[in-house]
Image (tube, rainbow, N blue to C red; front, side, top):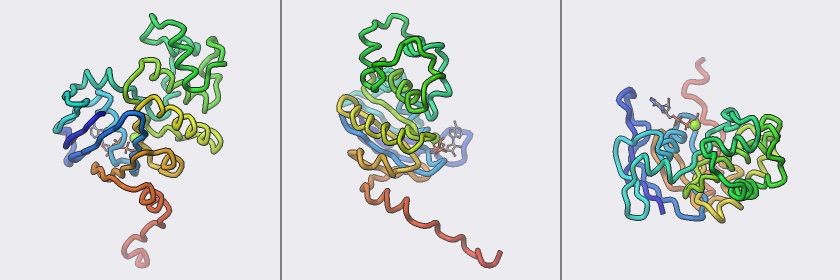
Length: 230
Ligand SMILES: Nc1ncnc2c1ncn2[C@@H]1O[C@H](COP(=O)(O)OP(=O)(O)OP(=O)(O)O)[C@@H](O)[C@H]1O
Ligand SMILES: [Mg+2]
């Protein structure tokens, strides 16, 4: 179990904190969903949990043990938004082996099986894959390191309806083996597989029911004051 206690992030360059007193716990084999609008701090929170940015206040604990950024780098696997843009291997095998040349073929096969790409020839160019397959490969790149926590930034962004559906099914399967923390601006398809839901607004995290997230999505935008006067 991973705990965040009063975690804040306020770099000196910003007038106001980007994350404010975040309290969160991520349980094993569960999917935690955080939904928030653009600029609310979703990616920043994931960067902190991946050990890529340093919180300015608060504690992150694994069971009882306080964690440093270095611990978090080992514990977490972060899949960035549009991860396929960062592929640099010429083949699927190269992509999976980047940084881990020692990896045995059974670990590679295991990771590809986990994401449903076990039949893919290892010599395929990542660029030749479909959008959905590329997303799966990006998950496998992290899973191969066997992280305790998989962090996913907008995992369904840019995919068409049927690929999004397949990806949601894959996440439901992955959470049987891993802890997943997913951030998105759109709750719609992810809510149904979430075990706990949070809303993030201007750096403040609140625990919410799935219904709240869906209702907030459907609510029409509030008209700006004095709209008629323009
Ligand atoms: N290192 C930094 N220094 C200054 N400001 C930053 C830094 N990192 C992020 N920000 C600001 O923090 C806020 C939150 O950014 P973040 O990228 O985490 O939002 P987000 O919820 O992921 O948005 P989106 O949905 O557009 O991806 C933004 O206002 C951003 O400009
Ligand atoms: Mg973001």
